[in-house]
Amino acid sequence: MIKIIVDNNDYILNLQKNGLIATGKINETEFQADILSIDENSFHILKDNKSYNIEVLDINAEEKKAKLKINGQNFSVHAMSELDILLKEMGMDNLSTKKIKELRAPMPGLVIDIPVNEGDEINEGDKLLVLEAMKMENNLKAEANSKVKTIKCKKGQAVEKNEVLIVFE
Image (cartoon, rainbow, N blue to C red; front, top):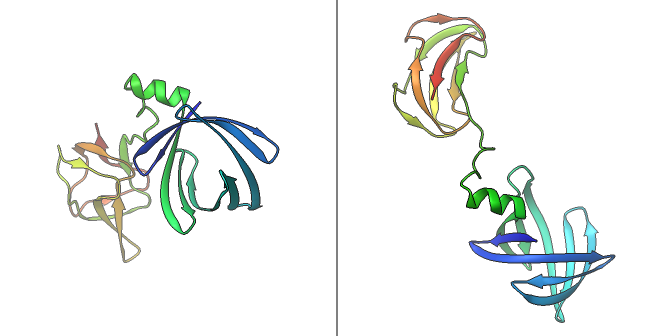
């Protein structure tokens, strides 16, 4: 059993694939479809005398998400296995979420600006610190959502490579 979420619509899918024919149930309704792989990212499906051309635009295997173009329309798809569903029901679905503990200097340099403060909630991609190295300003950004616990450097301070600059909760 797989739960498929297509643009916020949930479908429960039980699928058996036998060569080029897929059979199963979608939300307890039985179906049969002929599937033809055109290339690595394109498929043709014939179901109930209706033709579907599917192009895979993007896949994030880690998050089990994909962007598909079906007969010219774009769809966002998220697949969840039985284990994923169980973990979500138990509130444990975010355990694989990327956690950051600290920001380290990627190179020696001079701290030019620190646009965050201790206690700030930050989101992935937020600018945390500006480090000047080799006459270039480098914006160091958050790799995940977190909260700033401690700032271990000051504006104007010279830092060494791998020195801890910010600690997160």
